[in-house]
Image (cartoon, rainbow, N blue to C red; front, top):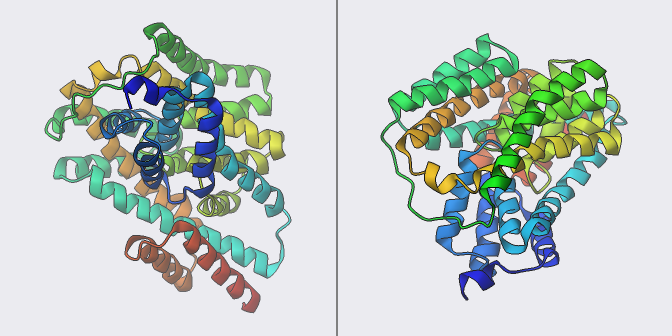
Length: 400
């Protein structure tokens, strides 16, 4: 099959392919990339291994949800703009709908059994975030220089709370990478070959930056919570490097530190997110649905669109220019440092709010440690750990 015919397809074909993935892809962004490869590279042969690897490298370089960006780009390559939208919607909406439904029922969950289940979900979050820290530290901080950058980032975000500390850690990590991380594996010479013009890329980048600047000004001037909600989730989606788990501290600073949502509701929702397939960024749908008005379906959709939009805009902006940029050693060194800083940010989030709100005694510690070992050593699927710890939490609530 030649390259041109391999790219041609219909939005309907893309929709069905990604709906299957959206209903079955458990395990987080790295697992999602494996599902994509099996379904679209090996089975359907939409593109070859080299092109797929190059696309994954691009999306890991950019801020935003890497697996969703890869899916959006695959839909774009296969069936144009409508294919891109079909891929995003089919992969994202199944889990988003489930989490909005969970948000609707969460407020009604009362009594010791229900509270025990919610506490079990918070312990799931401890295990899952610990697994993410462990895995990312092994791959992104393999040497003393990057381990040191991660430690400095952890200290910075602990001392400087909120988005300021997190953004500062990423910027300083990239700067440190330029000096300390000049050696490492070099990117290949393959090209992506997307039919996105430089003009379209520049327009997307201007829209990305314009919204990032204008939304907080508009929210402050009008005082409407709906605009403030869109602004908060757009900003969080704009600043995430390293995958879905890393959005946790950014979202916590936007919705918990501001008083929009309690820490208990936040961590319980994050635990529930582990039980559904699809991208971890759909956690935003739960947060928008369970918070202050506009909430419910409208709030969930506002938060969902807002958190995904910046990553998709910056992907479109990068496509025409990536092949030239990625070969530059300076860019690769800066991203090594930024990725190491991400590990430190996530390690800080593991302690607060995840650990401090969930581990209240020795039995909680034992359950969280058991969940972590099931994920890391026994390679248990995350949904099974969710069911197990939520069930144990319910039993403990009933007998306690």
